[in-house]
Image 1 (cartoon, one colour):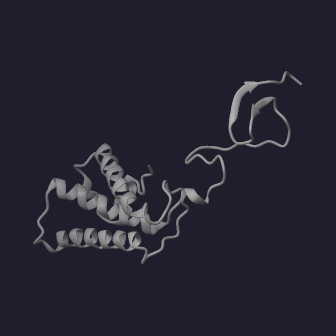
Image 2: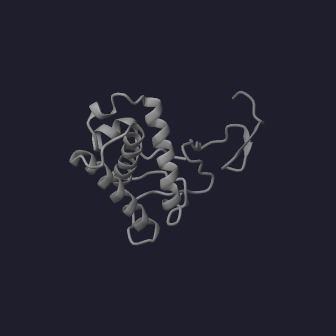
Image 3: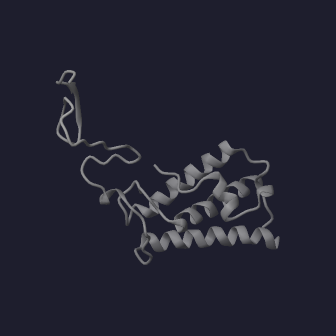
Length: 150
């Protein structure tokens, strides 16, 4: 599972740092993780998860949903014009996700289907132009060393 934004994105893309002053980075990360899981429920209808790369639009929507969740847990006044903006941003992000889910909005993302054989999300793939003495099928290393020092 990918986290579609970071704690620094919350203030870079949506809210004053002062508004999050009483919220720890661990709390921010927990909410970002939960929101990212929620987003996967929508994104998974159109893209093979996990996403490998995504644009600023996905990052922005994750930040908006996370900000709303964090501030709602702390408490806010929905009659205050500044706080109404939080609710509006949340509602817009939810509508955006529904459009992605129903296919009326296409994203510029790299999903797992665009990766070749042996792809492991977040991992590394090594190749060499000469035999190194390990058994394997070119994708998976069997782990047995068959060569000696050269």
